[in-house]
Amino acid sequence: MDFTGKVVLITGASAGIGASCALHFAKLSADLALVGRNVKNLNKIAEQCTKASGKEPLIIIADISVEENIARIIKETIDKYERLDVLVNNAGIVIMATFMDDIKNFDRLVATNIRGPYLLTQQAIPHLIESKGNVVNVSSIVSSVPIPAMMPYCMTKAALDMFTKCVALEVAPKGVRVNSVNPGPVNTELFKRAGFDEERNKGIFAMMAATMPLKKYAHGEDVAKLVAFLASDSASCITGSRYEVDCGLHLGTPVLDSKN
Image (cartoon, rainbow, N blue to C red; front, top):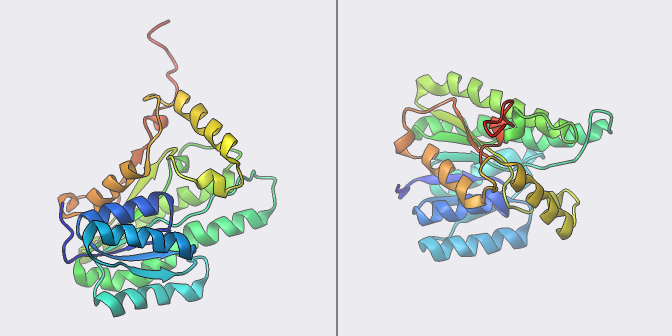
């Protein structure tokens, strides 16, 4: 795959899956606009991208849960590159909360995980129509696998999946594709940012790996490669689809084990 001359806008690019996507697209020669809240981390990722591609990415410090930032993100990207080919809606937060917890948890999750991508995609679509570009939403396997301890988070990802389908259907006649990638556990610092210490974070991943059909968990690079494929011309006939990268988690536990 080659993204030479293509402009790729990635939110949540300062860490985790977003950072992996940034580095992978840089290696594929894309022109990058990287959005994030952590200035230090974003600069670090941008430097790595520059080393990988020889091209310096555009850095945009912004929180997509703040509506005033949305138009600025698109404006700065277009001012710099005069086009937009791919939008990767990756930014997201996790809050461990159940149905009975404070509704403010739900509101915070919706603001970042759904409302932000909704508004940013609205602003991006006119430019994507011009370039016949596409959107890749980074959702989650929990959009279809209920976890009561993460109920509001699960709800936002389920909403993002339906957003993907509805927008894909609406903009397909205009030549724009919209797809989602739904990772299972990925070895990032997402749980640390949710409040877990290093020891508990390792314990969670070890426990999850043991329950996976493939007995492992994914890494950021695994997700980034799929995002890039869906954003590429190789996926020109794919839209409104969701792709699990979860080491088989969505398959569940067999009702009847062949060993018994």
